[in-house]
Every structure is written in structure tokens, then in C-alpha cells.
Length: 142
Image: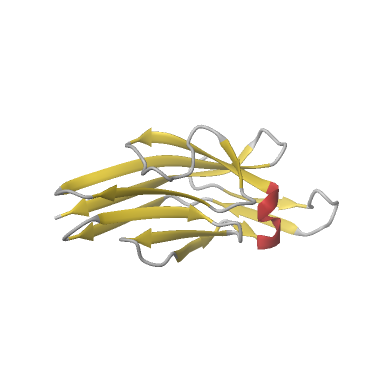
């Protein structure tokens, strides 16, 4: 379900508000004449962000609208290829989005490194993945 968007009516509390969950495919690329890094973050405030070469995180999209519902979801990162940096969130396990999760790749010698993740999101306690997308992290040291 790559790049899926799902709107759900109602919440666990029985309210009538709609929740929209989005995971758009992303290509986050970093180039530097020194160490280069690219990072992707699912924030507990409902935002998906990127960071290039250690800079501030900037908004890619709102993965959960309204943001107040973000804590009711969890993510699963399937490693398609590459090796994420140490300190990155786990792959191959469901992680609660009550905490911010991030994955990164860094290249510290001449050349390039790439990590491809398939990120899926589901409501806590529900086995159905409601949105997913491929996230490519690319870092090139030149």
C-alpha cells in the first residue's frame, strides 16, 4: 500500500472526528564535501520530518491529522536494503508512536551509502496496516 492515505471516522473514545494517516514515499538525499547524513523522523506530534547533514529537522508532511491522535498509532520499519546508523529506531518490530522515531544513514568516507525502509503505520491493537510508504535515505561524501 505504498504512499497510502487513510481517513478513519471516529476514535477509540467513540468521537465523530476523522483521523487521516499518511505515509508518502520520500527520497531524502544529502551531499557534502565531508561527512554526509540523511535522516527521517516520525514525530509524536504527528509530523514526518527530514534532516540533512545534521541540520534542523524540517517538515515533509503531517502523518497524523489531527496530531492529538498520533499516540494511538504505531509504526513498523521493514529494512529493504542498506544498514541504518546505530541509534536509529529498530526495524522489524512494532514501535509505539507515543515517542518520536527516526532512522538515519551517514557516510564518513568518500562514496555513498543508501538505506531503503518500508514504513507501515497501524492503530494500536489493530493488525491492519493502514498506510505505508518507502523511505530512501541517501548520503554521499565527495
